[in-house]
Amino acid sequence: MAITILQKPGDIQSAQSPIVFSVITSGSEANAYTSSEFQYTANLYIWSGTQSQSGSYLYQARKFPNPSGSGIFDFSKFINSTLTDLAATNASNIKYYKAEFGFQYYTSSTNSYVTQSGGLTPVTCSTGGTIFKAYDGYNLFPNSINTTLSSSDSYWSFMTDMGSVTQSVLATDTSNVSGSKGLNMWTGISDNFVPSKIACTASYENGSTASLATTLATGSTTSSLQVKHLPSSPGDSDWATYWPTTASLSTYKFNAYSGSVVVATLNYEIVCKHYYEPVRVAYKNRFGQFDFINFYKRHNDTFNTEQRLYQPQIGTWESSTLSYNQFQTSQQRYIVDATQVLECNTDFLEEGYNELFKQLLVSDEIYWLYNQVTSVVKPLTIKTNSLQFKTGVNNKLIQYTIAFDIGQPYKLLL
Image (cartoon, rainbow, N blue to C red; front, side):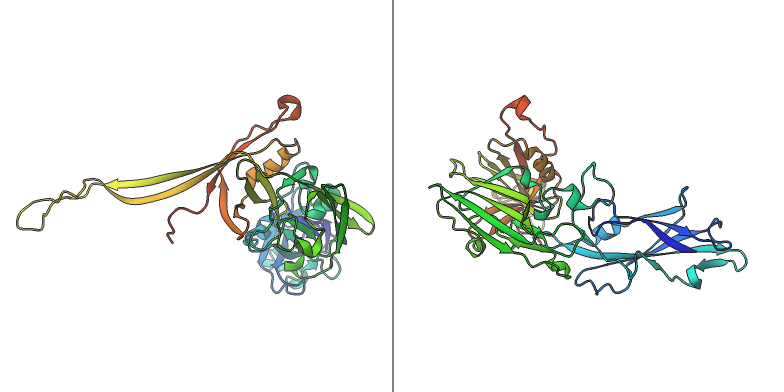
């Protein structure tokens, strides 16, 4: 009896969405598949580092055959549980994984389980064992299970959905979140598209243009080098290392190339300084990378305190006579803390931002680029849990108000 793989993931998959292997037996073996105790078995290996560092299996799984005779294993929960790093600390949060499959069945002659070949000798996913990769993200409906990302996501090359809009930035804006830059490219070995070159074309206020390109080194087998990061905002300290000058910059765009063919584009425009101090927010998108949104209109920073009171015993009860001091109180605070709420308003937006705000609303990692000069960020938790999305047809002008809780309390209490 042998194992046939009916379904397996693509080379790179999102760990929060199903990662499915379906297996079925072929051939025959006495007392095997017909046994009521027949089970498919799996060893799952998950690791980081290089492809050769798999070590021992991390999980074992068992599945009874379904009515179709198949064993369907979804490993996403196991793999996602190992992606514990924040995007701010691991800019290439990638895990390698592979699976091996076999079977076991119960035989009454020996009152024990019989495993394939007399022991758990697994059948690998393919000749030599295929190694897969998973990133800290999720797929969207109506993508099929185990969808190949390069065929379903237009801007996978940049690991973002921001290509559907023109992003506005100030000339002083940065894309630095704990050393991670805002232009994200998948450069690992993959059966999906890997960009070989990124070109930045800049337009200036006098009508002139300039272009510079950076060739990407691809094919690394180290998980920490699967995602390449380059500066995306004109205020980034290393912008001049890769892209045209920012003096009198008006608009610019990044083109991802496969050979000589442009396969994805990101567009940016420089806007004038606004009356209100903008709030620049970075949030982890569905590819596990940072996208940026500027809130140009008025923002409010509200300081809220929380307290608990108790009524102390006043007076000199331990002295020979009873008296009290005038500074004593019958209401004493014993727990006092504070929270801050940041409420931001957008400028007028393109309708394409609706899909991006959905990703902001469900993001589990958000930062306020509080001081871009010194790279100070403040962690945020989104407080807005409902948003009525507007359209140009129904609402003409599109603006949103989003509220965040600032994740650092006023007091530093460990």
